[in-house]
Image (cartoon, rainbow, N blue to C red; front, side, top):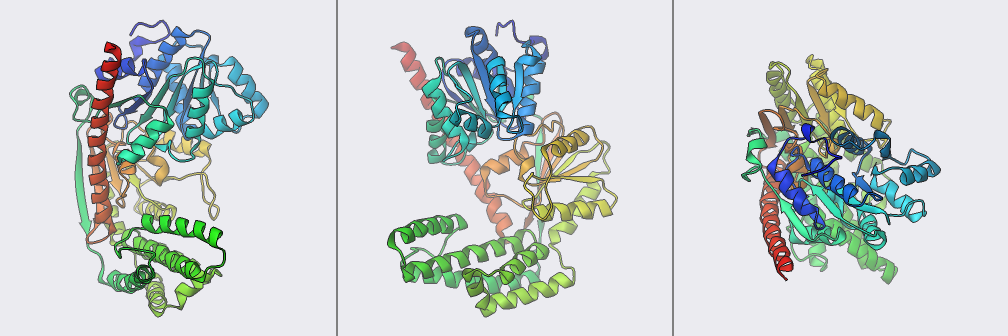
Length: 511
């Protein structure tokens, strides 16, 4: 790729990046690449081309978080000859008047989508002169996420529009992928996996290990009580015509709740709908309690049930009138007082103790809940294993990390100041941790998007291993296989779309 703006001596000549960039230069493209395979470099290659083709234009790179956008800014500074002062990072912390000036002066802008959306709505920004926009973590471009609004405005305002969507995993259904394509005005799909010939030389081997633990008999007693109540609520909903099957997921229940909520607004005071809403709320809460029991343990379940018991909501009061729920709560309280924990905690401790014997090892532990993350950190610190946590900014009971603190923890982890980083969903998406040896799933996740992002933390620069902690006969196993099948389906869909769009592009060219 000929370019005066590129620092070609610093960019590895990866065939797949060059091929994808060549195609993405010509039409709006969705690029699906494994985490750590240099999606941002493709944005740099296409972005530089557009700046040279339209010298008076600008380019915009968006990502959901400030740390991700800070990384993009550094990437453009490192790999291009664009003046550093022309590459800016814009966030909501900068005053609106100052942002307006920055938009006018800069050539390359990295920003959070919410900030861009706000400035478009307030008239502080026009996308008329932007010849290229990158939507990083493009799988978020569904429903009313800010990306959807921005893409529409861009196609309306820009004189020379070009869109690039980047993601490791857009989703496991035609409907979801089609929604992303529509919202981003995508014309072509480019996908590569670890098995593609042009990617293989750049992928380090990643092994997988499944470590099983038994579900304790004491936990099973609580599960039986809660499941009886759960099934009773589903049977009531089925008998009254609100459900057509007793086999139902939390997602189905939430969708039903939303539909009935809309009906209630239209129908007014309808007692049948009111009781249905109570039963649905009960079922959702019991389902969540079962998930906590199976995947997290007694402490998490105890805290959740205690909140429900103290709640003044009618649905919660109705729930705690049930003798099975009260008995389950009493049993949980007794076990909590005796210090019962999920057997995965002990297993995790032993795994990490073995792994940290290696020199300069880096381990990432993924868990869904902040309380679990903190419990893991305290347990490992007590064993003399230096561990830090990475959680989001939202304050809950005084918990939460500022973005500045998040970046500082990441810097210290990268430099080897501590071997174990344990975090919630924030460490799944896009953060730059280039050399992790082990990724440990404390629990499985049913989402193929999150599973792919978690696994993508290892095997970037060296051999890696992903370890799954699974409790036998529980949601841990069910969620693991749900994500596995969704991922396999997703790859089939994407290769199919790639083939279709490639044929269409060729036919258009031949006309």
